[in-house]
Image 1: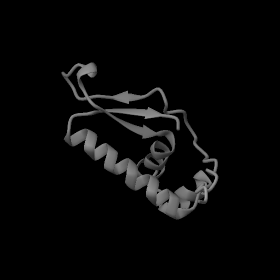
Image 2 (image 1 turned 45 degrees about the vertical axis):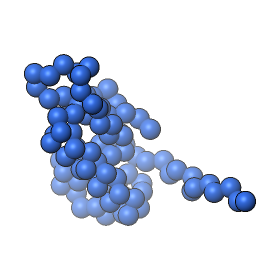
Image 3 (image 1 turned 90 degrees about the vertical axis):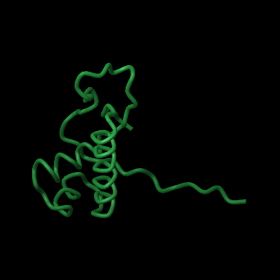
Image 4 (image 1 turned 90 degrees about the horizontal axis):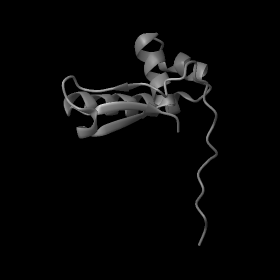
Length: 96
């Protein structure tokens, strides 16, 4: 039986530390809410694509990753944010 080991994770360029940020629905105690975890690389993808309005190719280059990896990050982040907004969950940003 072979050991299946994935590729080594490539370092990603991230401009700001978002790890101490949390958002929650108004009027609900945080300890009663389910949390959605967004990792710092997903947050950086959101910043570059949605706030800076960069295309995936340019965003990927800034992060030092491939365009396909960037596409996976942004899709994952968008899905998590939609889940949190629609289902009244907190959003926590963490380092991997």
